[in-house]
Image (tube, rainbow, N blue to C red; front, side, top):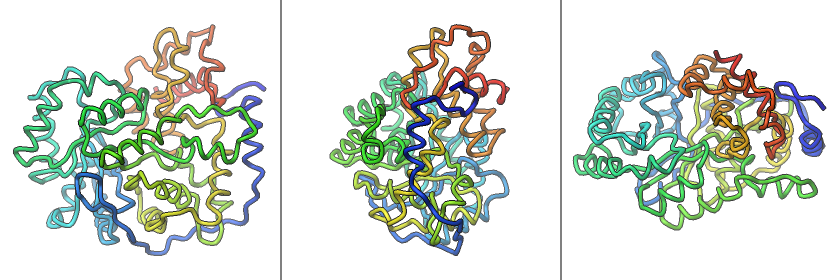
Length: 403
C-alpha cells in the first residue's frame, strides 16, 4: 500500500482494523459545569495539586477570564513556560492571578542548555517572575530536556540551589517529551536533580495497553521503559505530572463514538490517573467547554466501563499519523540527523491541535529541520518506524506545511 500523508502500511492497517473492531454508539458531549474532585501530593514537594492542572501552552493575551473560570472550579495549579507565546502565557497568567496568587501554585519552565551560565539562568528566572508578577514560583523546570548534557551542566545545579536559598523557586526538576527521554529521566533521578518531573505519558505509550488489545500482532512497545521510570520516581518520592495525555488530542474525531456523557478525553485522563505512580495531569484548556469536559474526569482512580472501547477506537484512528513522543527509533536511519520526532511534534500542533502559528514557531526553532528530506531520494528512514508511520513522507509534508 502506497504511503501518503497519514497513509497506512499493511501492518498498521491490520493494527487499525483490529482496534476498530470495537463498535460504539451515537455522539453526545457533556459540558455541564464541573470541578476538581481530588488533589494529590506532588511527591517530596509536599504541594497539594489538583489531579487535573491547567496547561497554558495556548494561553494568550485576553484569556484572563478563562484562567479565573478554571481557578473557581478548583484548578489551583497552573503550568506555563517562558517560551509559551513568547512570554504572553506568563503575562496573562500573572494578570489573571493578581490578588489570587495565594490560592494556587505555579510551574514555569526554561530551556537551560548544556552551556548555559548561572547568570543567564538567573536572568531568565527574573524575567519570568516579572511577567508572572510574583516573587517566586513553586516549581521551576528545565524544559523539554532531550540530552543528558543539559542536566550535567553544573551551572543548573548551582543556579537551582541559589534560587532556592533566595526563595525565588521552591522546587525544581525537568520536563521531557522528545528523544532520549528515558536516559534523561534516569539521569535526573539518579543524581537527585528533580523534586518533580513533567513527562509525556498516555495510553498509546504504555505497553500494557498494546499487550491487552494487540497481543496477537507483532507490535514493538518502544516506550516500554517509561512505566519503569515512573515507578522509579515514585520510589524516590519525586513528584510526577504528565502531559500529552490525549495522544494528539484529535477530539472531534471521537465525538461520533462518545455516549452516556463520557468522552474520549475523560477516558484518556482516567487511564493516566489510574496509574498510582502518577500524581496528576497537566493539559491545555483552550476554552470553558474544555475546562468542564476535562474536569469531569477529576477524582478518577480506575477506568470506567466504556473507557477501553473509546481508547481502542482512538488508537485505531491515529494508527498511521501519531508519532510517539520520545521514541526516536527512526532517527538513527537518517544520515544527516533530521530530528524527525521533533518535526512530527510540530506537525501534531498544526494537524491535531489546530494551532498553526505555534506549530510554525516550533518548527522554525529546529533550524534546518526537515529541509534535507525534500532532496532525499534514498529515503533510508522508510520502514524505520515500529508503529508503521512513514517518516519519509510525513517529514516532507510537514516541511511544506510549516515553511
